[in-house]
Image (cartoon, rainbow, N blue to C red):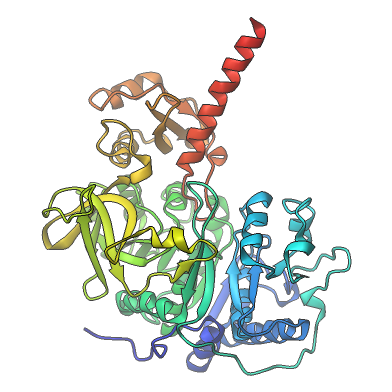
Length: 533
């Protein structure tokens, strides 16, 4: 096995990531789709060296404001790449960045700030006058400082602290907290996950190995959640290898197309549900996907139809879609790759082979005992990339262990050569249906007009399909009936606009939230009927 020429010393330090990249590859370009919100005058064209200088400058400004090693600094601001640079600056000052998604509602942010116990808060005027209006921010934080350029009351603006004295980076011990992120919140209030620099390194290593073939060769386009640990790892991989970067904040196909036509990336990574949207680019003018040799998909399983369309749009020889299955608590667990030929045979529930040498995975029954190969059950894991705890909820963290194995919350089975097949999340299983996810894949493959289909439990436990169509066109009942004729009985489909489906910061569907909405609607209808009577 060929290993990268240089890796961090068994620790992945976010505060030094850009500096190390600049020492090796100073002139490699980094292009943004929009300027940095905090330093907009810098424009959108950078290099590794200039962004390393931005991080160093931001760290100096934060130190001047009073940020010190080991302190928690929550970053919750409007979506922009400066989120990531501010987090790296926080880490460079020796503090612990806490990444709170721009998509979180104010009441959830309030609960997380309370759990953080008087953190610093980096936010902006837009958040304070919007979702955080009414949240007692000053009472919940040690101090609040402003990103962006818009003022708010008497709070200090980071952008106005020009000339702050530069300082050497501060390294905490590799076993100390280095980053705090939050779970997707698909089942309720997000949990705060504490990562160490050691654990972050053990996640980075297999990703470095997988990406070895494209070092320096391809322009890499990343359009992902800026607060997710996966984004930091993607940066860590490609900065180490010296790949030109295009970093995008807006995943809308009409915004992506001109950027891809201009920069012609060879590798692109986004969330699976954004890839579904990018199917619209397959036949778009100027062939924006024609240069893509590699598609990288993480966060969630991806529909086979989407894989086939994306690969068909490439004009490169032997294009691949590489899929990593993992969880925020553990990092990558298994990997798969698809060619145009193998994508046609993909059943959608196959998420590849368990990463050898990095991950131990087993399948257990309801009582926690391992089952035979090929038999489905609960997935449990051992790996060095696992988080150290849920902040403020350590008992909840410990409850996920079974004899030292971490319960993933997914159902699945292991096939030949430890190939992993997913069935469903434990919490999403409905009655006698073997796999909601499999049914969704089948419907997506049979109905080209579907942009999304989500099968959730209705008020009486019945499987309800929530469907989104391209352009919100009406669903053809005859085509639906034909597509579902040989499937388990489903309730009548409920059609929603794609943009109204509740999602997480990584575009995962909040299935529990949809079920709750159905329950609330029925209770309201019952109440209204009673009042009318």
